[in-house]
Image 1 (tube, rainbow, N blue to C red):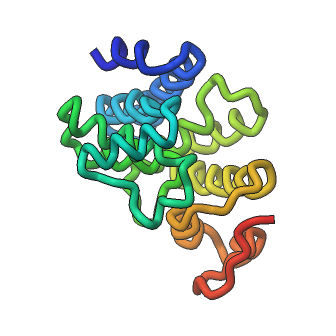
Image 2 (image 1 turned 90 degrees about the vertical axis):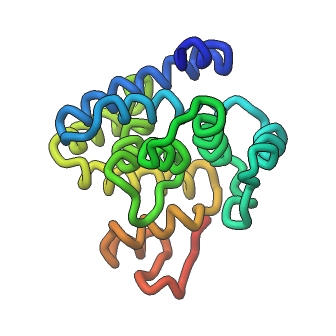
Amino acid sequence: MLLDRARTRMSQRRLLHVLGTAHIMAVLAELHRLDRDASVLAALIHDQSKELTPEKIEHELAHMGEPVTDIDRDHPRIWHGLHAACWAKHELGVKDDAVLEAAALHSTTDAGVRPLTRALYVADICEPGRQFKAAEELLDVARRDLNEGYRQCLMYKTRFVIEKQKAELHPRSVRALREWLTADELHEFGLEPNGKTEILTT
């Protein structure tokens, strides 16, 4: 049923990305003893709202009683994950907190997230449709060690956000970086472990 809904909610290109992400989640679940059904469900949910406009997302989140909060206000690029999780909870009846967290935070992650969220963060970056060499290399690391793969994906995506998108890092991403990176690695992004000095864009 979810796949049928997906076909009406997204383009063929987006659907292929979602299916590729689900495939990688199944692989990571098998390798790292995650719940396979929950892993695939989180992947199928995560980009359900990707092609909605920010205005529609904001309106529908408010209608579902979970409006955009101050921490997310200046980051409309990531609202689709929040909306997808909210939609899954209200419209599909998904109650698994791990699945909802993974879908909601797949773009930003956060400190203290569950293994399922870390796995989806990796799978979203490394699914087979991603046409860049680093995706395969990062996935190879994650197959061997999910945490190290996640850590390297954090650094890869942070460079992309800063250097390619010229965007400010989301506060949740900054928290995750401080949790997983060394002091020297944080310095590459203008971050201090204690959180006092931040240079988040170039």
